[in-house]
Length: 182
Image 1 (cartoon, helix red, strand yellow):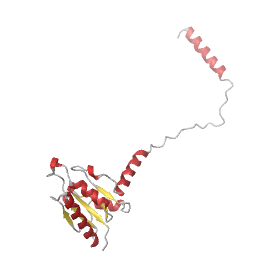
Image 2: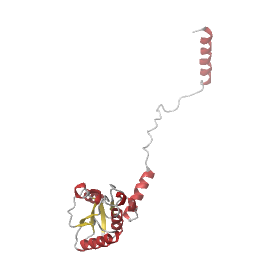
Image 3: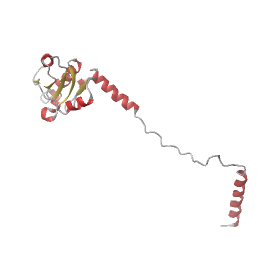
Image 4: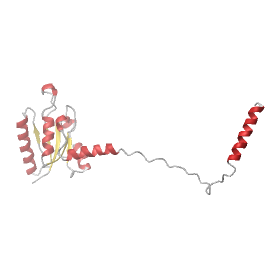
């Protein structure tokens, strides 16, 4: 180290000590440690999820956009998560079944409405509706699938529905939970 560098350093130290000579320590020797910030809350994502659920519960969900392979489900606010989980897993006994393959839309709606009403009046709680996957439809786009989901979501007798397990028809069928009247 050169003499000039040492003189500059000593002079800097003297200047610093002179500048802080009247400084007194704070009354506490505790250090203020800032806690970690709270985890971010995805408020908008939750609002979006809640809105989708509310739309589905009110029957406002647009099932017309269901495509081949898409799962469909619906539940009224009176149907709890455990019941819905059981329905989606196919754990309710299927008490009746309706196959709508080959039906025109108007005929399918009438037949489905009569079937649902008849099953509900008999006190049935779970039925299966087979609407097909759309393999034989023009462009392999399902026609009945979105219509059936839309109709079911608007009928008070229907408490919930969910896409069936693969062994029961998969995305070509629905398990439908009914409000029994029997």
